[in-house]
Length: 223
View 1 (cartoon, rainbow, N blue to C red):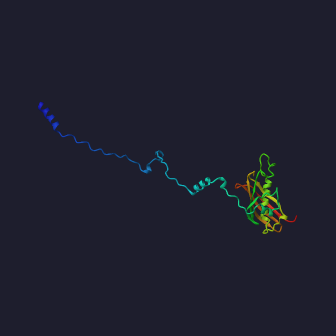
View 2: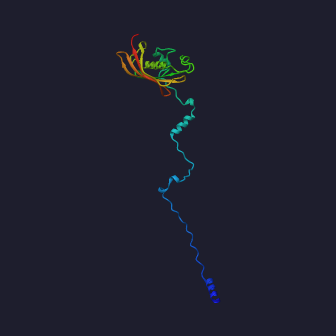
View 3: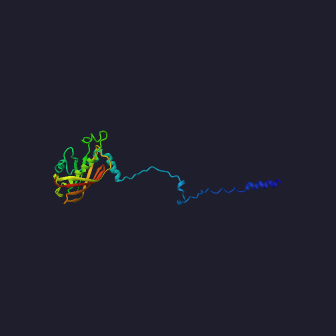
């Protein structure tokens, strides 16, 4: 019995050591394809933008902002000044309501301006607490621009025998107040030389918006 135990212990001591474990190999998890990614549950990191693109419009806006406001807007051109207007129209203060002509096609159309100021003689009564240019004077000013179109050799008009004959479809869209510049365009639509009647279309603007419009009749004849 003792000999058997001794033989077993000798066999354990003389047996070779167990082999070392196999080297560790990294395992790879399955990665979904791009089409299988759920974008709603995916978190994206944002990084600061290093480059920005600028258009010519941005540069133009920056230049405009850098320019002092008193230098941004050009004045209206002068085709006829007040002295030339006085040579054509018979009106005088306080009823000459055209300050400058900025476009003129004799016998066809004209564009003129009226600078509305608090010193205009109608403001003390219309209205003392809220100075608004009377609509009838806006119509009169537009009719005077029509006179600048018609009182030309091309049309045969005469300042002695030229009259404002009527208005139709006149609408006042917005009030004109002290400080506004009234820009008026009058265009000849129809001329009947035999009867001495001219039909014109007129529109007045402030800041590019229509404030008054209508149709005008002009007449030539003996007093």
